[in-house]
Image 1 (cartoon, rainbow, N blue to C red):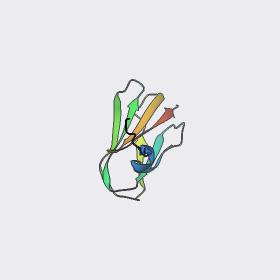
Image 2 (cartoon, helix red, strand yellow):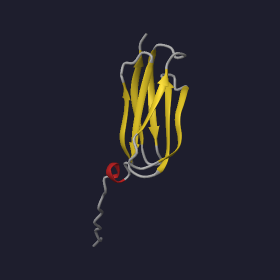
Image 3 (cartoon, helix red, strand yellow):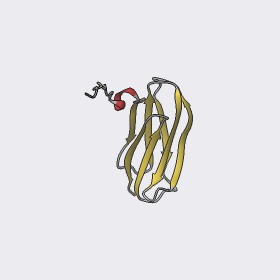
Image 4 (cartoon, rainbow, N blue to C red):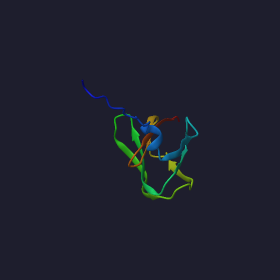
Length: 104
């Protein structure tokens, strides 16, 4: 008769989560957008803003972020068109997105 094996599955969303905070405000926004983030461990992070066609509009952060330090970045929207944008925060283990809306 065949042998059976017991497999323990781990919830990867909890073991690999490294972003503890990610927020863009105000939303909707007019002249300036503030995007803040915080990570749980020192790591490489990139924060980018894309239009709805997937075209990169701004790279706001691309480098090593320190653990438990709140980063806040301001986006000057004077050269941006009214519409919907996607802010994307990425680490090696996790990616988060937030839709933001620019109104004039």
